[in-house]
Length: 103
Image 1 (cartoon, rainbow, N blue to C red):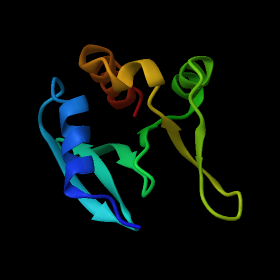
Image 2: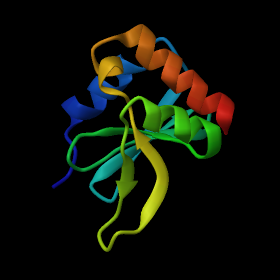
Image 3: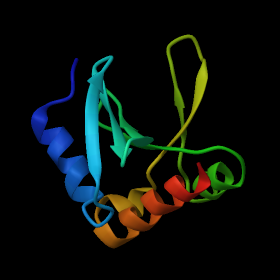
């Protein structure tokens, strides 16, 4: 299943305060960029993930985020956007900026 244009528009709304965003559809989902730097993905099931490793990934895990897993158990360096940020654009923008700063 592929993400819809409405789901993509929702990600733009979530990270509206960041600015300079673009996206590219891929593998049923979409990748999101800020001024050409990938920092988030939208999975084919509609979940938003932030690119993260090291201390930033640990911060996300402490907030209850889960790591993106591909079929076969292969993990990637993407963690779900914390649930509290899904309904709070300011908090989502903060997490997005932190993801960009950690890259």
